[in-house]
Length: 406
Image (cartoon, rainbow, N blue to C red; front, side):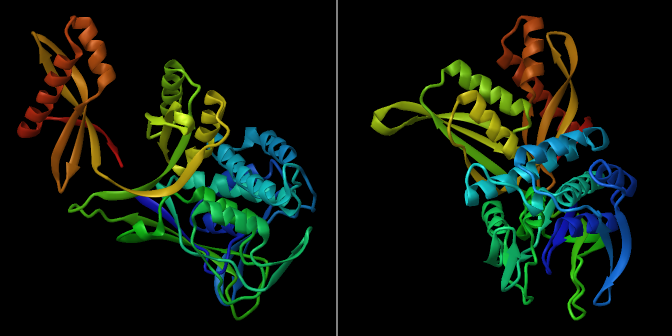
């Protein structure tokens, strides 16, 4: 797997994150085209910070204050120049900022510095850059937040700024003060790192470094390199253990949804990319029967799936347990020739591996159900025949592997 590691040892801002991804090899033309949908052509230059060569991005945008809906409209207007995946990511970044602003200022919070064109361009640029790198996951090392005080549109506050603190609290990212005065991590930088993070830094294991990039901030204190570093690494598998990643767990309780609605919600969650979805019978307050709806998903899907749960179930709140560490087996889906009563068909079978050996074989249910319907036999007989053929193929070594799932 190829993993991107952010090391914000001197903090993080949106322009620094975009710059370090460009230095790591992100598609420069794609990033510039995306940013130019919001601002005039950004400047991309090489600078030095305390002797460290780094890339610096300047948007040359003027300050402006916007509401959340105005920011989202501005992002939407850039859709023709931004890959859809990056655009969706950018919207989620600003949703994180908006949630933090509402927590601090109430429902009618105004975006000030984070609503300006330079912040929007930085977010779109960073999301497009990450998308263009095609990494399998992102890990974020502890974020330096700084010391002392910072001054913004709402006056002077201790570092970190209120919005930055709220975003970092919800993100599960680790932080440290650092030794420098001033605001090292901005709300935009915190929201980008929170959105990008998919793997706990503690789960990285052994890896080989493939690329290193440095993104520079505006300040140049001389004795401290005001940069953020990112590395693209290739992890080295340990065949003696299960591999690791992280997921978010979404939960909500419902006592007024029918079985048909719950089944539809589970189907919709899976269709939208959930790793798993389930409904668990529970007894709620006052003895009312209900269901605990639980959805397991990658971090980049959690906001979208939480919105789906709210709309389809009418629930007023969805709990999110972020970045839950899990162990996973290597899985392959392989095509197996299966015979039932003289009828042959190539069927997909999922193999689970541990220490180089297959320990579980499962037939794909939908294809088995369809074949059972055609043959007029019970689906359990077809499932059993497929899995038996899978075990036999492993003994003989005759399979055609079509995909490998991490």
